[in-house]
Image (cartoon, rainbow, N blue to C red; front, side, top):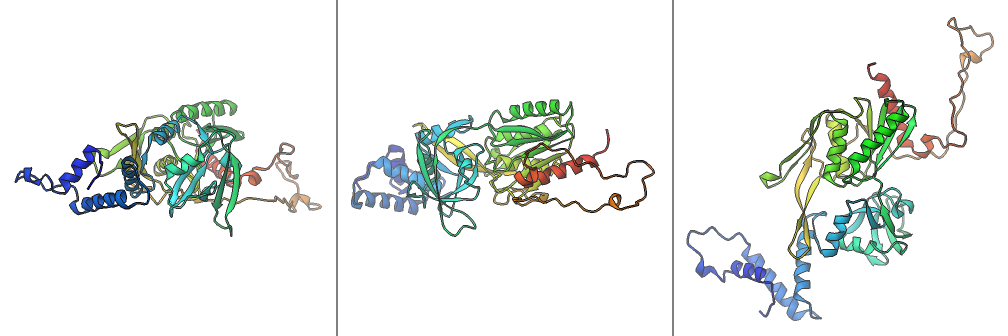
Length: 430
């Protein structure tokens, strides 16, 4: 064979083929490398170099072999070239270029895990679960996630066309949108009703927990010092850094296990625990999830559910319960490889199962609200009076003129708020 192989690989193949067997000691353990498979690899490499229609560089062939090996493990393991490694490092800072979309793989195509709020993807109407079958007329069948990300990244303002297959649609949807600088504000908050706050976490970043504490302080001030309850919205949150998920869980727990990991290596068992101190002081908490809630979102939902600290409502989550470790290599590239699984405090694996809500709420949309006033006793002629006074028809609650009812703008959130108010009513008076 006239092959130019890197010395380390050449040595590995030579040893596996038994070329150095004459120097082996009798009491050496059997070789760990699979001899027959490495012979096949060497033969395939030699035939490609000799018979392929065009010359192929050795480095290109070996990199393709490494990529294929990692891609064949699971949807989240990958070989990161220098550019992909740099982009991955940028992703946790909260500002990067692109469409604002978290993707995975399904049946060889690129699947949308979740669009990120206030990004081109979200504004264009891309939904969790969409399958991207073409990017600028390039088919995604068999494309690695690294290649897909590279195609979708580009200068702000530059156009990109996506062809999408969506459940319930008879034919693919073509969406044209413009790339933008994605500045993810991971924590948003507002008051839903007096005393009842709302916090949405769009993605878990290194600054998410401090931003959450700031948001809760602001909501407490608006509520006059104490919140009656809080809705934590993790819908379409694709995950992010593990430390952010642990710290967010810690904010609502008064101690105990948040999550633990297990893998083949005994050292992969890690426990992550909460510190004493609940920032809500035990006030009711409702957590919203859906099929776009993945990874770190599922860690938070699972921890709060297992500790019975929150009511989890919505749809079953995505089910990404694996841990990826980034292993930098000497040439500036890196391996992203799955090394462990996540487990909730009660030992439930999230992987391919997700978190099942305590109460299922479908993502329905109310198109029209029609309120019909029913006849009351107070409307009947000659009705008896109330000995405690009053007895007339109660005044209608005040609403902002022109405001869209919450049930129409976000039906699941309206249901979550109703549940939260019920929990607050059942809470013992302090």
